[in-house]
Length: 64
Image 1 (tube, rainbow, N blue to C red):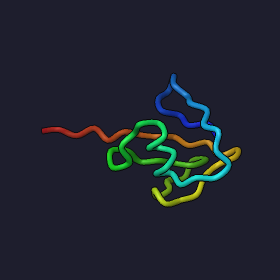
Image 2: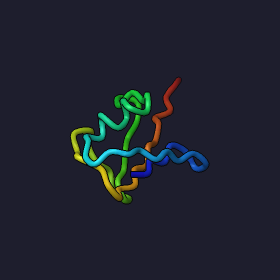
Image 3: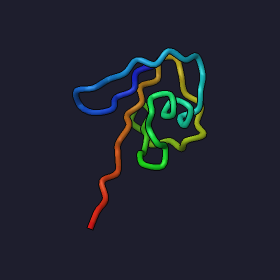
C-alpha cells in the first residue's frame, strides 16, 4: 500500500489489512492531527485498508 505524506514523500507500507489508525501509528503519525483519504475519498480511522490502496495523509494547520 502506498501512503502519500506530502507531494514529494510517499511511503510503501507492507500490510495485508490494518486500520487507518494502525497505519498512521506505524508511521509515527498522531491520528488526531490528520485526515486521510483512500483513492480520493475521505475515510475514518477505523476503516480497514491494505493491498493496492493508496492513502493520502493531510495534516491540519492551526493557529491564531
